[in-house]
Image 1: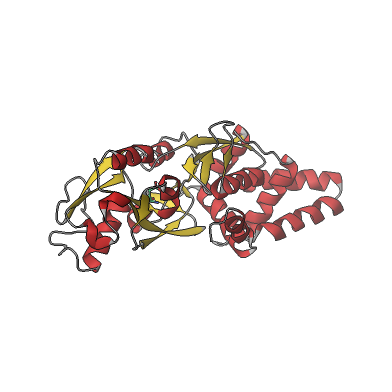
Image 2 (image 1 turned 120 degrees about the vertical axis):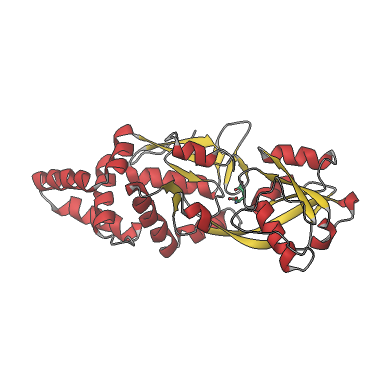
Length: 308
Ligand code: GLU
């Protein structure tokens, strides 16, 4: 577990600056920091204390609860290199989603605690209150937005398909009538079916975006669902499935010798920070993410992890 703590005083003043500057869209983190420094430097001691009390009052109750707890609990991936990866030897997490989580915690002046999540578990853990937010290659979709808040996207990936070279499959057309391994709770199966319909490879008869279920879809391609990605990789080696479909960032670690991506990639996947719908924390996180998009912090992280 990686922990970062900044002065609680500075964090509270920064939070105030963020909230006060925010009317739907918050000020960037940088001006908030400058404002905090100026205020702390110039104001007499009592006034500073008063400002801090007011600042604390400005925080939404759920954000204040995180500050009082002293720990921000974040759901992250543990096997997606460059996003959320846990070093098996040291237990240290790294990746741009880890850095973003650390920065959110830093802005609150609290420690951070990571919980490894999967596509299947991340929303349950958020709904149960076990975690405060999800930074886990979580694609923003209209359907998901009905249940959770998502920040402005901090990264866009595409869906890809990994196959064993021996299969001879090289593009989408090779997947007709094949069985594809996907993760439960992911966008992958739906994205693949839509791409195959768009390419004219399957008719799409009976396809309904609202009710699509990978478990029952058999028109021109079928799916086997797994709880985690290592299980799909094992199934691919064992010939239990003909292909492994998910975002390319996630596939990267399973792209080993003797395996290739098909030539097509499709379905842009915008990753956002997911939080409880309607919560004060959603507004707080949105302010930070938009600030980090504007001031180049996020571009910097994309560069650091070689994701561009
Ligand atoms: N990003 C995709 C999704 O949110 C793939 C699943 C995953 O993130 O594990 O459904």
